Image (cartoon, rainbow, N blue to C red; front, side, top):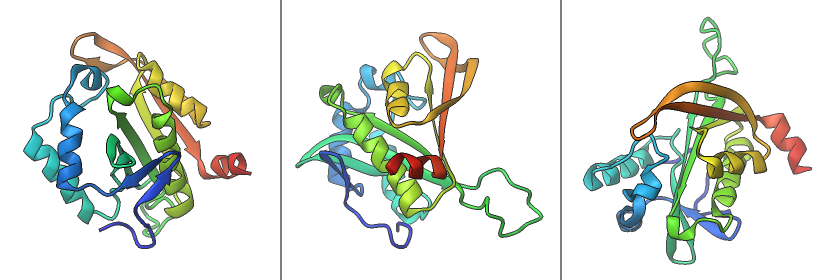
Length: 193
């Protein structure tokens, strides 16, 4: 299940975002556990069956908008968008902070790196979050050493809000710095004019 009014597939520059299927996830798993991919992920190795189950179970969650990125019939990446409550005072039961924030993430097949696909899919996630879901704020995070990832966020106009000094554990590098980026809905709208 996806949120009412959200349609799939969705354009993402030269790519198309489609809801996950077992067959598409099997194609993701061809490259998902490779070291050049897992080097920058929090969840490194994934069990194929658990990976498929998590993605397919997400179809029933109205706040999970994860998809597979295709170039024609070729799987080139994955995207995730999850909607959450923003920080807000809980004495207002239906406060505007409910479902007002989203987080995004993306991975690209290393064979497809350097072609602008990460920027295209992350931009499509921002459009989904702001234009379709109507969230107030979108965030994304990465290891500070993952230059390609934070450059994507900056290309899209996201603002670096946090530079955590040695706040992130990396299995090979130890404690390293992490970044958090964000964008507000009004910033998105101004940028789209």
